[in-house]
Length: 404
Image 1 (spheres, rainbow, N blue to C red):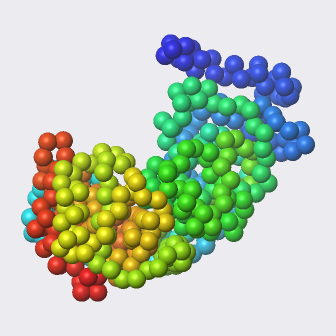
Image 2: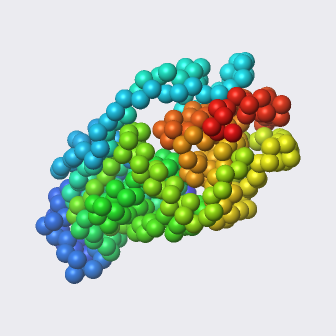
Image 3: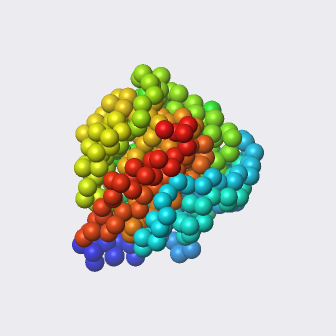
């Protein structure tokens, strides 16, 4: 099989040309340059196309659709600013002494001590939009004449589809807007508090679209509650498509996050309560905490925390349990964003960090949303880790009075 795929890849330029020529008798230049205005017409129905096969040309550029502002600027017909950037200073995190000495591995931070100490000045970039003309969205990648922008990791495609992209397109969209990103399609937390926050921008500019890939078990319910109606596309020709550079934590994005939160809270009763422990239980990428459920039960008895399990509970149950929580706690990971999405400014997140993977992503989220961040680093034990209940309680006692 591997040898056959390698042979097909070497012959990738020749093979689809034969198929296409049988259907539409176009010049090779028209097929490969994406000059679709000259020959695509909606009334023609479906067509064979060659756009995705550019992937095999030497020198054809690829880029993930995330923090891609400079790339989008270079290929856009027009760009404009939706909201200005601004400077921010990060607050400190709340943690016990000697916690950071346990860290043996890091993710999305190269200096935990600096990032957790706070006082770091950062420029939050403007929110910008970019208009691109004559592009193809095929199997989760946007093809322009000069570059391929990936909306999700290519490993999500079957091996056959990675080497034999689809060449059959049956849809044309005059003006689309893509709100999703490669990171949002990979991590639930970034989907909920980045991609879903982008959605109103896309809705204002065109038909909101995303790639037609399998979605997580909670996505559809969140889309319903947030009144999102994206069109999921396997393959389409886009006469115009608007994309966004929206990763800066500016005031405009803060207001959109607040609007998302209020939409979710409008479906439940949000009475204040001490907190919620969100169980990970092996969901997502493996971070095994040997005493996770034991600690959750301990905090329920000692502090009155609620417990939810994202593997079993549906969105209405999760949002109802998280609404009004002063503290959200659990193993560091995207599942904690269920709680962040409903927590108002002044609340606190406490992340239980594996020593072999200390992650800084949630700290940046809480900073942007004017929430507090605390953490406890566990002790390595076998293939996982264990967190001391006493350390958790002492960390909770460090949180500002407004959060507890």
